[in-house]
Image (cartoon, rainbow, N blue to C red; front, side):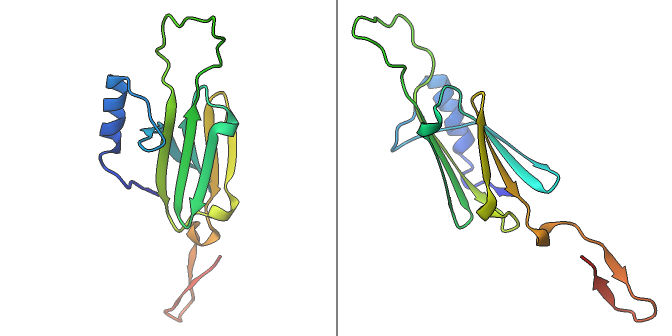
Length: 144
């Protein structure tokens, strides 16, 4: 149901993890995701730990799904001196080309425990159906 648009995206993600660099709006880092089919629904789950829902942007234009998120630093007083900062901050993004068999008009989004989950219904025409054979006619009919 998904088509990968950039074969080097995974390599960029690994390099960013090893180098400790964080994403910017002009060059966002890649957010990890899982995608699977659950009955008549396609599910995509993105890891976005520490991101507030106001900092998540989900857009669909035709069949291109774009998810952007920004993990901002925790507000600190001037008297606070940072001793160690290993948690990545910055912008992450993911663009996914969705198949025509997905109903992009009815996407549901849920955010829980740092995981953004999108549920996209599979269109009726993409669901499996039986083909019946007429007796003696030699023609096949599709029954829905």
